[in-house]
Length: 336
Ligand code: ACO
Image 1 (cartoon, helix red, strand yellow):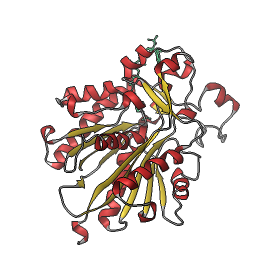
Image 2 (image 1 turned 135 degrees about the vertical axis):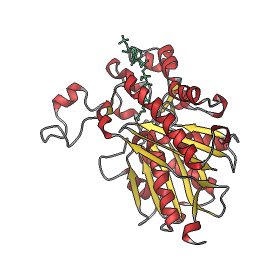
Image 3 (image 1 turned 90 degrees about the vertical axis):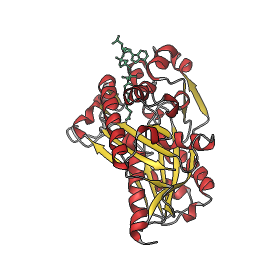
């Protein structure tokens, strides 16, 4: 196979969520919220939360499932890319912890920070490495442990109720034929909106040289802050744009796509995008009801569920699109 002919494909998928399930009714007991408010505004009914695991632990479990599905093992992997906004530590990256848990000695590993678009950004990096011939088999994981960084009091309710913990993984390898390949991954970001959805502290910037102070803690700056309506409006606009952009790039129409795998931030966002683009809702599966918003993990988790349930089959054209903090957004057509 010459370099110009190499295409990258997804050869295996896996996902993992920690066993503890927290329902909207459980949240009603610890903050001023209601099952009705959460379901109506987001579609979420339950989410999973870690008890004593971290992001690399969730990533590890998802990776094992993906190896099984791709019929390979950790030692066959020559690069690890882990997308997360909730790393185990500030440094080193969670990918290094994952690499060690997988029992690998010197396999390269990197974290990729593009928040809810992190999986698609990582897929783009993996595709480029495979297609350049630099690597042969890459593990791409999206993994998030949001619950330790959320404010589960009434002060933090607008954000805390939306997020869950989980991980999704895929194996990316060279594809011998065109029926199965990752199309161009279109990436965008707009950092001018960074402070509309962020965790400000701990941080190196804007704290008069202080990483984290008692004042920061008292102000709740260690918790995510989100301008919900602003984010909602931008998400609906940018997702529509990127769907149109990838379809145009691939010379496809909405009717050509078998399944739309949208980032699971809020069911209302995805239903609005589907309505505006005239995408039949039955082509837009969702699992946010069970897992909440799992940021970088949401698309690979949904993909894995769809593959294992038989809803997504080899050869299907999947349109993946995500929007998240940064702002970042991305899309791609994956011929599975
Ligand atoms: N329970 C009960 N009431 C609540 C809660 C809660 N958990 N949270 C907020 N409220 C109250 C508010 O205080 C407000 O009360 P007020 O009217 O008395 O001021 C009222 O409910 C309405 O609040 P809004 O924020 O206006 O509600 P909205 O209809 O906009 O829905 C939501 C909020 C769900 C956050 C929505 O704006 C949204 O989905 N935004 C986008 C989320 C998203 O896509 N995030 C990006 C991905 S995440 C990432 O990248 C990391």
